[in-house]
Length: 192
Image (cartoon, rainbow, N blue to C red; front, side, top):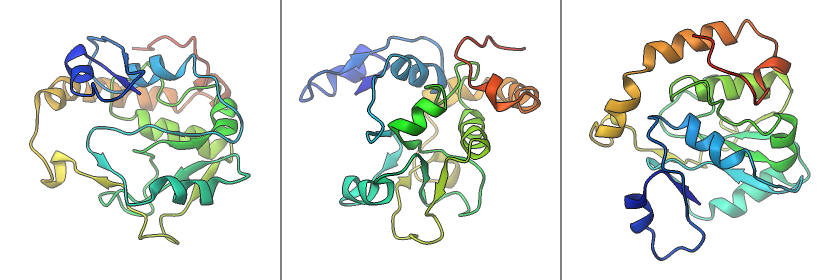
């Protein structure tokens, strides 16, 4: 498990092996990239990037194993907010083999926060890695308690990453003109 600050780590003292990233860069893209860049996985491992406002259903681990057994896939699940046909992946769930096909990039560090999940979705789609169970298994809901739908308050973290919303959107527009083979390179620098 990884958190961004020592304060967050202190709240998780009951857990062992909590990595503190200490990034002063707002948003989720950099910490997730920083955490995953050295991750060693087996093809059948399942990677789940859980944000602080996503709440899994009962027996979520068993359900994910059922749907990802013998797959190379990015699994799309219902988050209770997005339409079941939206083209993004706010909750990255993927197999180790899919992670490796994506060149070990989940959220590209050229973003702060917004649009990183949409690029992740597009990369997985172009590499034919998407397994979408949102329509067929609507009961599997990882509840997204997001401020935009009144499920929690707007906090200082939201304020910090929201400052970069326009920059992230412009980055997304530029990057979608690139082929997926270029977008998944880990040595990419911000284009703007």
